[in-house]
Length: 246
Image (cartoon, rainbow, N blue to C red; front, side, top):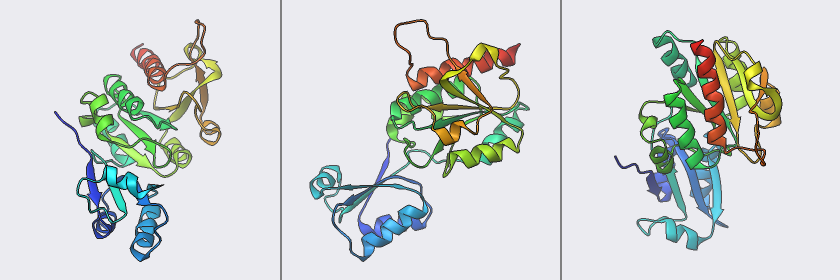
């Protein structure tokens, strides 16, 4: 199956897309253009917390499929996002304690796709990503997930820390990955749980990490001290699976 992002070009078309509630992952605006329609687009983008990238006209010309971009090109998600409540409902429908993977600072679409694939085979009920500084559900993510995106719901939230606080009220405990944490084998990772994974470069942000109940480390026996983010997510997810099976 082929996957493709939807490209929207032109000022009025992009404004209408925002106002209709269509999820827009990326917005490219021509640098230096500040007229009325562009200001309207910027306001609508900020309402949705859409990341704006200002680029030269030549870059927009390269991205354009119509040659009539009018200084603005937007990319909509290849898949629709769900609400966090939908992920909790998926757990209830299976009569299972919620298992959710939350991603912080994952900007590489290949990592996101691989993690969604792992989430599916590990039995996680969904994935949560932040709106800013994060990859969205692009065609690359869909391809890398190897079909898992058809089955694993993904929610996009404005504030990951606030979402964790709200999910704690639903009974979830949270564990995040950090090389300075407690070895994962020594932690009780059963019950309703959220696994928080950050990028291999920056890791989980401080504000998000402080809201987690446990800090888990993966034993490292080699000559380097870090794993690719999607691999780390897989290792920790399957420790949760192992403990749930006992």
